[in-house]
Image (tube, rainbow, N blue to C red; front, side):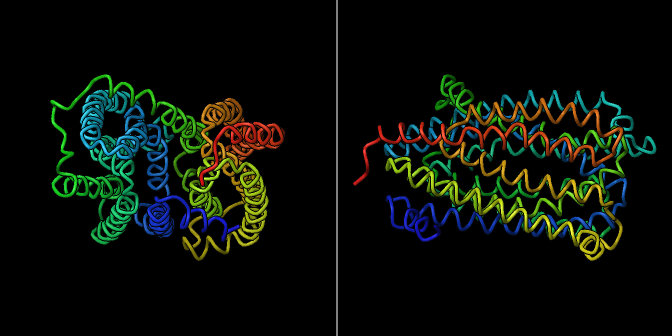
Length: 455
């Protein structure tokens, strides 16, 4: 399987080596991000305490809802730039960048107005069930800081996504890696000098934005100087088209955030911010098998597209079934091992500050397996362009998991959110995926047979 994948990526079409470099640097970036994320848990937890760490986790969950507040412009840019690049039309690329930049700047102004209005009018002491009003003010500062960093990332992200369309993924991911390294190093310095939670949030969320901005400036003053946008290059209809084409990514991201990230906000509201800490730390541990699987799934994505181009539906079918079985077994083994040694690992990892009851451990292990299988289906649908199906599944998951969370969290505590999420993945992703596999592969054979093989 791996040798076939290597052959497709490295020795296939002309862009194979570019794809391989992009995948390798992306995997390195993701790998370091995972390690840094794991190391930050005990560092920040011991520095700010149980309740404040819960505020940070809940704040990140809230701000995740704004990750695609640019209206999908940046994601819609990639495909359009790739088409213009393939045609050798640099002037068109400049128009796309200028129009995307203008659209994001307008959205940025609207986003900032809505964000500050929302943050200033919500009683965060009540929303996160905090012990005193000063904690509520700190929560507001953290959420404002993280959302502001997201907002400031809109313009440089236009350049980042344009460079992906220009097949400069390896360089883009290398800059992303630099951003993660700066964030982790800055976090260590902030903790050493006793910085508050808002400053920690600013460093963690702002460092990647700073690096991305520097990268954009270097690109536009160097190899991309002919792509430096001006107002004369802005075409409103192009901006509207990018918002429309990127809308599917925005909708998917928002539904993903509502279905997966809302649990920490609900736990904070019904149980308290301190409970979010216990939940988030245990969840972070059980998320690691999924994170490793996501690396593999992302690396396989180009191979599915290349196979589609060749009309090789049989390879797609075999490879998907092997992936589904292999990743499923991997999730069972790793999640089972984590369940057996969860509290000893927590003792070494965070110094025994967090201990997990057996009910939460079992629920987390089951949810980890179900979520991993669901992600295999999700990436498969994305790689084949079945966006509508994936969004319908995400909406179905919200319809299942959100009401169940509202019902179960007050009764079962944080474990209720895990049960609700596992059932949501099962009902919305896994069961429909398994029941429709044969029909999906039959449709795939029909669609690939209409594509002429590449000699």
